[in-house]
Length: 532
Image (cartoon, rainbow, N blue to C red; front, side, top):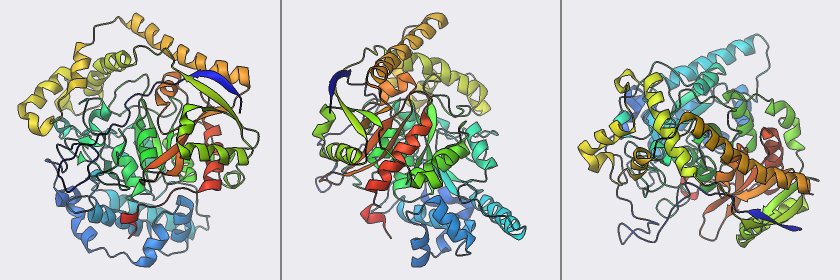
């Protein structure tokens, strides 16, 4: 493989760990000040659905038809009359009830259950029955009737949107976020809300990934108290890994889809910034924020991307028949020299080469993306009040970061046990004019894109191959799309992801590359303690 100099892209909001433990009998990878939520009660989460969920009895046959299955496989079983969308929804609700809270295997991944989930499933069953009566063929590659979890920074009209923050428990709204409207238009069942790193991991500084005041501490199903969940879409990644839903929606500013997807052995897609609408999503940075699908496989990711409102036809171009024939032959990837120290990455590169990919090895230097934190601080200082003014419940009109911090201090042990240092940084960020800030952001993006595009042009590259969220910051600043696919597990059982990065607006390429790699490796396995 040819060598050349390249930066080591910015890694921001990385997973954190230490060797400290809470209790001598438990091998915690870091100190957890809080495990279970101080705001949620297991039975209350299910509300009026509780009795039906508790009484639901899933058979081994039903488990075999649903666990780890793709959307087309599940649709085929529904079409053959083996179960209904209502059965499917109840199956996932029962798994959440069984595994998610107040038991030795609890994961604290789900923060709310949609009271209308079964009504939505019934509507999907009625639509499917009507279509069958008319002789229409079932759409195996659609999201209709499929239960989906949303990261709890995404607005819905039937559940509060808290961003994990106690102050937002009353943040109910009459409006769905635009991406939720898109999902509902396609007939998706909104199953509930997934826990997250509070305020999308831009709040408390040294808090663990997956912690929020409302949801408690989300835990990794591959190692409940020994492995990081990744953040900030922690509950979304964990929920997909443990089969709590067909799929989940996360959001990313810099690494918040890629990190928990790779840490939980699922497929995560961070699209080109601007691909999906951000209206109705609690912001960090309107300049960089994006939603994205998190799934057990690449095909499901493509189906969900379509339903979210992708402006390109992923399924037709790289789906259905072409997913089966996806190829890496002749694709030219840049790969990072230092990353080869990870044996899983080294093996992945061999797998890519055996599949016909051309790998060009690049050394590690750092891009000059100075001021990334400044960008986030300044954006959130204006974007959060804009969300409060135009999208949140009227209770929060006129609120800003300072008002949230003031509210948290009223009961700091419950609302902010790890402090709120990142919010303080937002307050302390010096003012900047709109014109200067726009120039600053555009310059950062230009710098990141120059690094990538110079290499692409000089070496005729198609894309880049990384690990987890190691290059998420540079990809975010450049608006480059990325997709991570399960790459295997180390000797401690920790999952890793192989992350493909494509040029701006070349998202469709990711699906072809990821599908081809998934097809030849098939690394993902269901967590051992959640197979029943």
